[in-house]
Image (cartoon, rainbow, N blue to C red; front, side):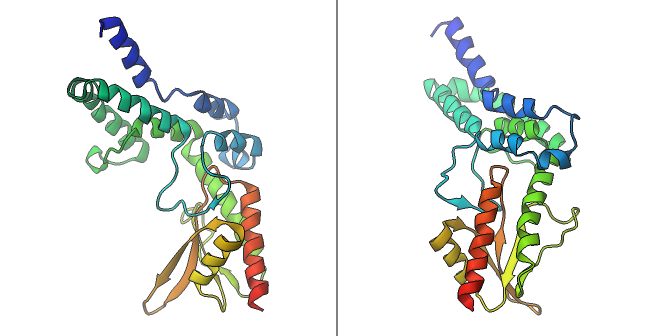
Length: 242
């Protein structure tokens, strides 16, 4: 490989995160143009965010609290870096890519307000960070809080249905806990998947104050229609319970 080819490949790999999806998302809500609360209600903006992902729309994933899908730009970057490393792992991985790790670690530490020693680097953290910054942490939090309130405010009107998550913005964003009197969390979770193809997880705590519920965690790609389907599924479960 000649020097020109090497520089071309390196440039592609190092700028892989500059995907058109990120540019479209960023252009949809320029910095300081609107408040996070205003952007949270802008379905056109979140439509663009949603289409940066390659998720299966045949399922409704409301279990994003443990692991979440990577946007397409991160997947593409992973593939590019993998191809680059396999051209000559000894050279490209150790001499080209590894030296960049500490810079990424520093950027992550600044973003999350912690020490670099607290940061563990995973694959393509730089691309994920870029996508995260293109949306903005406050916008993400406001959107997830809005989605949570959409289902809690609707379902809490049903007798016996309770949200166990405080609405205080300082304590919660997207994650919410839901219980239905007379129904085990495992049964409700199974019914939601069987009838609405909704994926949630269950939480059961054995203590002085035991409780059992389902945990609902949307993501930035979650639609209002999917939240409506969740509500319809819980409403149906309550009717079936009698």
